[in-house]
Structure formats: structure tokens, C-alpha cells
Length: 294
Image (tube, one colour):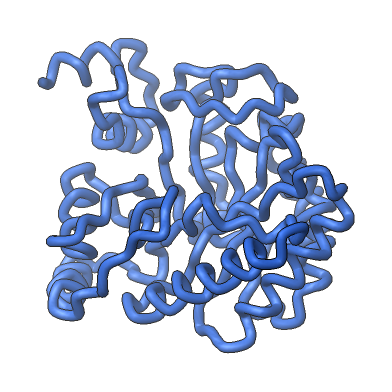
């Protein structure tokens, strides 16, 4: 069965219930959200009553809640420890995010590995693993390191870098990987032959570590290292290639999450993109249709 959804909001007054409602409106059977603003530390208490209402509906809809994903905030950077206070802030804030996931019953959190900001890749990798070991010693949540495009001093644009981090993590039962199709292509990987890439991934890391896929087209040519998402089928990767990834039998049980941009920065595309993916037929007029729905 196809497990597909998108990024959805998580608002103070509706929380998980609101996230679920939005996801269902898009025709999703999974979803991903931040537990608060990704760019700052502002957080409000988790409302257990709203969580319970959402879980009841999730069970009624026969949605596998273990496939629902939380994304860690962008402001966490474990790769640079030049300023010890900033490094410890990232560690402690990540700990709090993991506690929020536990309270919500979420099993997986996606994390950008981080940027070394001049320290060099190897030092950055060591720092990331150090930070992860400081947060994974007491949690039931698995952190998924996201494959990155290689913009600036980002770590994680090469599978070997992800492997090095995992090798240094002490609790390997709570560490995994989130593939991002845009990031993989922008990093220079040929995802048009996805089975070959999976073979490579399996040799380096192991397919069993993949627990989420961010499905995004890319505005950029392969190897651009720019990280600019595009709507499904309207970028340089293309609909057919993305469809083969989405329906790859080796990753059938892995949730696919759309993070494509709002059309004209105003209209969420997810309902229409998910419908197009389910129909397995590209609609070149899709973006115009989304705009006309207003």
C-alpha cells in the first residue's frame, strides 16, 4: 500500500488534531510536521486531550501512526562546536524536541545533520555524532539523518558522510536515514536509476536504515548543490523518475512525504499532487488548476 502525505501545520489551538485534519483534506494517509516554529525556540505545551482525539481518528481511519513523522527545527546545528554554548543549546533543544515527540507518541524525527561552518567535514561529523550520543541515551524516538544537497558547508550530501556519523553513534537502534529526492539529485546522485542507487546505499549504510523519503522535484540540474524544491513533475527530476521512486517495491513500507512549494507561494499543492501520484499520470496543467480552485 502506498504510504503518502505531506508537510502540514501544527498550530497552538489544534495541534496534532489540526495536523491530521489538514492531512486528511489532502487525501493523505501519513504526514509530517514541526512541533513548533522551525526557526525559533518558541514552544507551547502539548495538549494531551487534542492528541487523544487525533489518535482516535487515526485509528478509525486505519492510519499507521508509526509512519507519521516530525521534523526537527532548522536552528539545531550539531556540526559546529566553536561556541560551546551554541553547541549545547542545539543539544538541549534537540532533547526537548525528542521529549515532545515522545509525549505525542511519534517514533521518528528527521534531522538535518548540520553545517561545519569552516571546521571541516571530519570535525563536523565528529561533532554531530557527539551531539547525537548526548541525546539518544534516553529516548524512544529514532532520529533520521536527512540526505542533504551540499549547499555551503552542509554535511550529509554524500552517503559516506552519513555512514561515518552512524558508525560513531553508540545507540544504533535509534538512528536512521531520511532520503530527500531533491537533495540527492542536487548532491549529484543519479536518481533516474533508483534501484542502482539503493544498491549503493545498501552497501554503504543498509536499506533497513531508511524510514522516510521526502519526495520533491528540483529546480536545479543534477549536482548543482543548491537545494531548491519544485512541484512534482515540474522540475529537473521529472514525474516518471519520481513515480518510480514512490512506487519502488523495496521501500513500500517507507512513508513518502511531499515538501513541494506552495503554488505562487499561496496555494498548497498537496491534495492535487497526491491525486496525480495515485493516478500515476502527469498533469501538465496541474498548477493552473490549483490556482483556479481559489
